[in-house]
Amino acid sequence: MAEERKAPPQNMPNIGRPGGGPGGPMGARMNAQKPKNLGKTLGRLFGYIGKSRVILITLLALVLVVTAADIAGPALQGAAIDTIKIVDGKFTVDLAEMRKYLILLGVIFAASAIVTYVQGLLSAKLAQNTVYRMRKDLFGKISRLSISYTDSHRHGDMMSSMTNDVENVSNAISQSVSTLFSAVITLIGVAAMMIYFSPLMTLIALVTIPITITVSTNLAKFMRKYFVEQQKLLGKLNTHVEEMVSGYRTVVAYGKEKAAVEDFAGSADKLRKCTIKARVFGSLMGPIMNFLGNLQYVLLAITGGVLMVKFGHLPIGAGITPGTIQSMLLYSKKFTHPVNMIANQYSTIMTALAGAERIFAIMDEPDEINEGKTEMNEQRMGGKIEFNNICFGYVPEKTVLKNFSLSVTPGQKIAIVGATGSGKTTIINLLMRFYEPQSGNITIDGVDVRDIPKEQLRDHISIVLQDTVLWNDTIENNIRYGNLDTTHEDVQKAADTAMADRFTQRLPDGYNTMLAEGGSNLSQGQRQLLAIARAVLDDPRILILDEATSSVDTRTEMKIQKAMFNLMEGRTSFIIAHRLSTIRDADVIIVLKDGVIAEAGNHETLIKQGGEYSALYNKQSAGLAT
Image 1 (cartoon, rainbow, N blue to C red):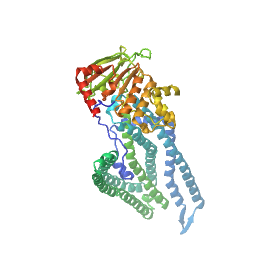
Image 2 (cartoon, rainbow, N blue to C red; image 1 turned 90 degrees about the vertical axis):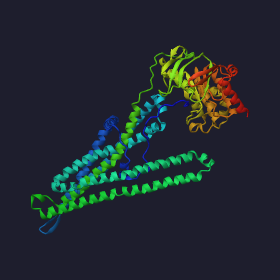
Image 3 (cartoon, rainbow, N blue to C red; image 1 turned 135 degrees about the vertical axis):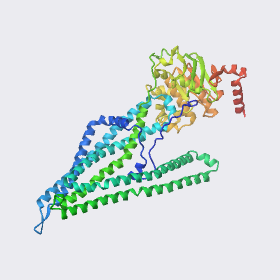
Image 4 (cartoon, helix red, strand yellow; image 1 turned 30 degrees about the vertical axis):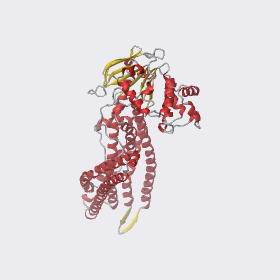
């Protein structure tokens, strides 16, 4: 029923996993997505994380233990080295003291390994608990969104929010929460230990930090253009492949295989050249960072050696021992490591927050309006429908229905015909309250549909569409989708009424036959018959048939018409059709033109009038005759 849905395009972001970029943190930083409102998004995300506060607190406590053990390691190693001394020209080792430090180091490392394992389990549990709640809330929100929202937003974006964006949030929580907390504690702890051992050597170690930040920032800016261009070219290449595969029959039919291959080769060559540049310049970051790290290491070693040998007797070199130098060298490595950890997590965190922002944007959309208060039970629903001076347009500047009025008596069969865009499907959209009219009203048995709860309204209406929706389930479960509280005998009876029982019984597993996605292991006609059987079992008071036979051959159409005739018996029915041969028996046929009723009457009356319906019918009949 997408015929007249011309809702305005929305500037939704193109959501998807980043692909094709270089590996490693540098490439990730080049492609990081950023949220528009960082503070608000972060606060809401922490609200979800905080619902697992016991796990979070335990996790942070374990991170603190592991980090403290990691910080203590170099100090203990330095102390162990200082048990080796030269006294009066003799080489001596305090074995008992060294053994004590080595045993302590072994215990710390073993305990740290166990705690780190438990920490990983808790991180995974925290992430999955959080994304479970987000997925549940997001899916619940999507189920409450209005049809107008889903019509005006790309379905791929919504699906990507449910999959890619939630997965990005999961990755960030499992990797970044403990990593960032550990990095901050490590920076503070290592800085304190370095100052404790030697303030002067600490100052020397800090000299390379501004150089590292300046070099990495400028190099990132320089490389960004290559990574951005790489992503664009990759997207173009993927689009080309998708079009080639999906439109392969057309390509072959027009003999364009060679041109398609040449186009692909040209795009692939551009991507190859750009990727080489991105990889070459991106690979510079590692060697440069290693060089600066080694430079820091050498400066500290030289400074420590000079302080110990030349100034050991002065306050400036007091307490500098080989063990102190070793500890400072290890701490210098640990000091730069958290900085790199935070930088490496930047992309993961920003991408996750951008995804969370898109998730929250959907969650913040208003629910479908459902202010109905008048109960409309099965006994009250008679099927008398009135459209009173309806004016409606999907966009304000383009009216689809103009003062449309129509009266339908219970059990009447109303056929609606007209050109594409004339408003046929719009009538159904308004009756189902997928959209609300700008003016006028629709009543059922004298009750305004806006006063009927939507669940009750739609519970009394069944739709058979041109594009049948079938699930990856058994035939029986597909038929009983609209009425789960039914027996197998009810299902079989509905299928028999819909002319679907015969072909179902011939299948190896009968009603237990599993359908492929979309029912692709059945013919189009068989899928339509199952859809009709579903509507029969639902036993609606109002029936809508929207182009239900337009995609099948004439012979199958006759079978479906018979099934639809059985289904329409005693029900108020609306039939939208392009094939006028399918609506000859309708009680009233209305011809829509530019949003108004141009003609109305039964088949014989309209043929005698010699108007638009007559011309269209004669044209179709002549086409069939030829």
